Image 1: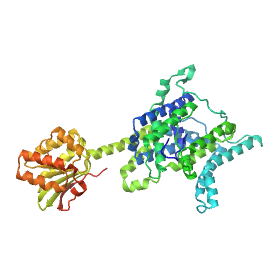
Image 2 (image 1 turned 30 degrees about the vertical axis):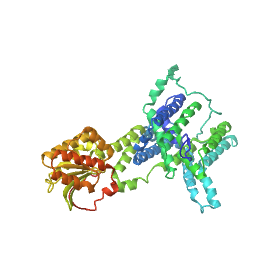
Image 3 (image 1 turned 60 degrees about the vertical axis):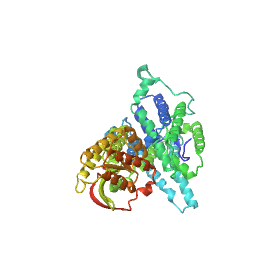
Image 4 (image 1 turned 90 degrees about the vertical axis):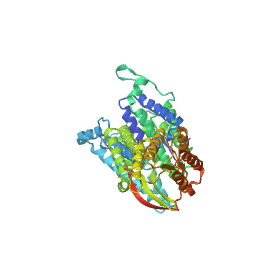
Length: 537
């Protein structure tokens, strides 16, 4: 159902940590219900065609978020890596508990965990050993891709031999008994047993998630689309279709007692390296997982907890995006600040607060660009006369009306401009709103009282329709610079309202003119009188 064949959807460390954060101290039914609700939210987003909302999450925000979550996952696994036992909620609480219990670390678990991390990171580098296409490279690639399974298998066999052959107590903590077989096929639970022989209703469980009802599905969609884009090779990614795919997976998964799922980068990378042709490749991996659940579940008992922690740590440590810092520092310190603040907020206040902060900062910057657009003011000299050109570099909507008005008034009263006609270059506009049109009408009237005319150039058709519909008074327009002599000379020669309206109609008719040809200013000799620039922060 997805648009990119390499994307592999299933349980991930990211969703595991998110789920644990919002369902801790809750029965397992709460996890299953969260899966169902996440799928329902994702399906609603797809039906409402809200895929464009994902575009509001910039790369710096995504980088800060994923880096923070990688750090949170790694820190949360230090407990298992060191053989510690304590309960903690959140990044800060986990760090505090680690500091309190660090003296209780088990030597055997610590040595096994650290050793597994070193081996896993070393095996990750094996994929580049040997010449491309050689037998050594293929063997090294297989070992690199299967490093997690290989390390877990070796450690589990070691624990099994230690306990059942050597008949000695295993010195490190094991995963313990795992219920064998497949989960039953049923509808997701809408109630669950609570503490002290009470029953948790659907409302009780849903309200206990808090912001997780939005964070879990949105993060799942974000991860899925990010992975899809990384393997798309420039092909378009249909965000709404990816939402439908992920929603379907979660809705169906809730019927087999699953936790929330999303795209897994590691499994997707394996699929890409293996040369998958269609998304049907997921069927084969799913069948192998089902066989493992049926046949190998009793042996999961012997997997050391330190080994599982090492697998997670070695996987997420490479997701911390250090590479984005240097280019952002050199080219966009504002984006770097967004990344750092998102990262810090995710760690200190929680992922939902960090993600919301990052998106809010980006939206505030976009609003600032619309409210305070850079404006260029030029004194234009041509063979047929002079005029003052005012060019906003971004479209004009009501937040920017005051800035544009001030720029036009200042230019109109400036040196050499007090007796010259004014031209507002609207080539960067995409549309206008009611407030902007009324503000421009007031500006035309204000300049008219001073004996100066304000003409408009290059307005799009949608803006012209709005101007005509609102009956803007004193409006004159031309499609391109080559048409300016007509309206400027007409204004000077006639000076009456009827001629002005006639020129306005002429300008409206010129909307369909060739813009590429018309906007050329080959016959203009421009000299800069004044520039008012408001650079983006």
